[in-house]
Image (cartoon, rainbow, N blue to C red; front, side, top):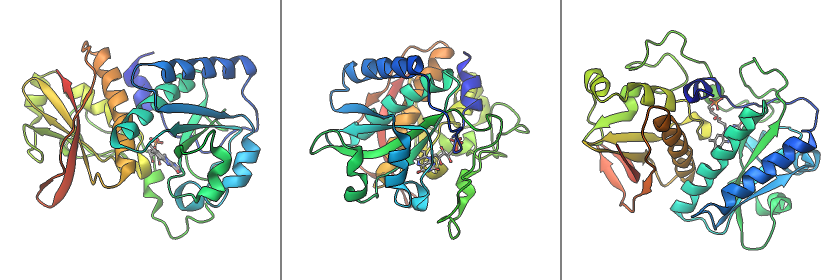
Length: 299
Ligand SMILES: Cc1cc2nc3c(=O)[nH]c(=O)nc-3n(C[C@H](O)[C@H](O)[C@H](O)COP(=O)(O)O)c2cc1C
């Protein structure tokens, strides 16, 4: 699979066929998820498979997802952690997105569902053990209409919400790869990539010269909570720092972990072999914008 094509094509699926996933496929997913759990550094993370989707939907309808709009699917997978420190947020979403890429390769659809603010009593059905945390589950199943843009069909609860973030328009008119002004649901490359310092715009020429234009073009298609795209990159001579804006919102750390996964995979496809090192940095402020550097990737 061409990773760039995968990134451009991937989108959240919010409507599913009423059809369960075959046992052999499910077993493969469970096996793959155990491998992720057993990888070095993932000791605090576990996946939970909820095969009886109907039961989960019934319990979470009205209290999970954006404005309580729960997505109905035949199965769900939760990501459970032993703590809620910043690194665990980063690692758990990296792990989940690794699994979701596998899911996509099996022609299945998925959509993250935010249960961070769902009251404990409503979501206790999800847990597998005491003193654990579950802030996200994902819906998984066969997409009802694989070619249609995703939207929430049951929009009860979203009447007063600005649902622009559910728009998944893809940038057919964008001039690849340096995007100065975005015509899609994603920010422009020039809005997320800075040179040496946060906020310092990078020119198309400089990005081209470093051969990184394609990388930054495609990774913008990473999913993010409410499509807020909080990731920013500070490009240095021999490395890239990943920063997130508004780090007090823990969802932004989740989005950063997803981005770390896509960045590594996309970088691999253009010949880099690195991986992110987590940074222990302090909250910084530039022109009134709070940001936190969460990782470094050697280029
Ligand atoms: C951490 C996270 C939480 C999300 N939570 C929800 C959710 O609760 N409900 C929902 O409909 N979509 C949710 N999404 C999906 C995003 O809205 C979606 O990724 C974004 O709008 C971009 O659209 P796309 O994935 O189709 O490219 C979530 C995504 C992420 C990464």
